[in-house]
Image (cartoon, rainbow, N blue to C red; front, side, top):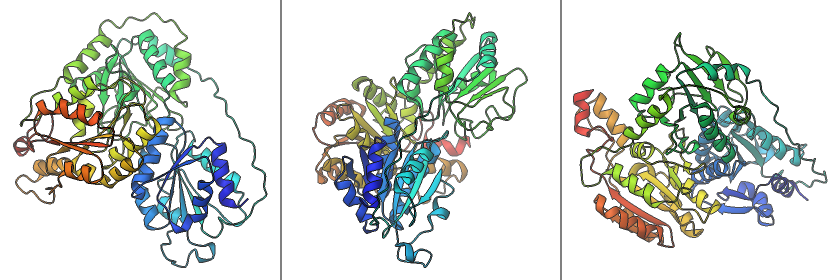
Length: 540
């Protein structure tokens, strides 16, 4: 047995059944070992797409996502997925080929100092060296990726050391047991609060944790808001759902959070977007109590009244066993009614009414369908008007990475082939990773891509019009014929120019028995659900 076979075998011991890659000469021995393993290898079209697929697969399964790429340019391309995993707290291991060990530090062909490159993003950067035990190297990588705050780990593999023979027996797996946490202070605060609210987010949530959160909200009569792109953590039709605390927050929800006498932040680091650029919960209100529950970020709120260093799952399990007597009046019901009013779509310019289109999409898809998106103004309609109901039904990057939706959708469809998987993307967003449509065709991952085309980088154009009215520059896009492009890859394509055409197009795409793309032409004036593009300069 050589090092490569030992490492691949140890990945199998850890339950790895799929990896995503771009082949490269710097890790040919690892590719050879993967060929002889039980691990399914998915070959993407670009390393960024492969890393995003691995990250999305990890989000869906709760296991460590695995990606293999070559040195230099390959690692640089894959860094997009590493950054997403860091911001989203997703366990991911990126195995990177490296120049031969004797050539390191000599400016060799495609050499990169991976400690310097990934050190600020990764939980750890680990190196295969001459005396490294390959079994323990994999164990260290898995442990670091699944730490209290999960995240990416980079494992550097010099090409010559992958051939080295090993006779070491693999060490046994180590199991961890969760300990109970002290929730006494939290119980007291919840019991006596009149206007509490929970803000749930972060990673590592399982279906049973989401069910426990729902039960908790019912037992304790507490409204629940979710943080940016964590909408699958709570059923939007549930009486306790208060909306999402993200970009374009419902003003009524923000006012409710500010007026609450108890705010419980569960699982979220509550970084820039959910904190509304660090303005929400920052200054502390004298009549408001703050509780932060997070496995590792216990210093995020130094002003917090209670800090619990745990994943919410442990806390929720304990709280759900209690039978409290609380009186909130109509506080929770009013929060849900505010959300329902906010999710009723207004009219926008043009023949395509995006809010209506999203509602049609919700009505057609099963509750367990998986909806994926990247970044751009088009996503505002998804977050505001699509009602998520099931855990694991949303894949979206909190890092705001364009191009995420299509690779994520492919990973989702390959993991759950019997579930409907839809990617929504803007014209700019999709073209960051559109080559992965070929990957979808190759692996018969029959996703449906809905590309919202307004002929520009809409988010940047919006800010441009606000800050430099009349000085449009570098935000227009000349787009391809997306329908023809999908067909050229071997998929199904159709164009939609009005709301009335969408339902039939969606029916055809979902039943195409091949990867499908719906090209939706959106009026550029419809820059957000509430603003026309031409109005921005006047209201700035």
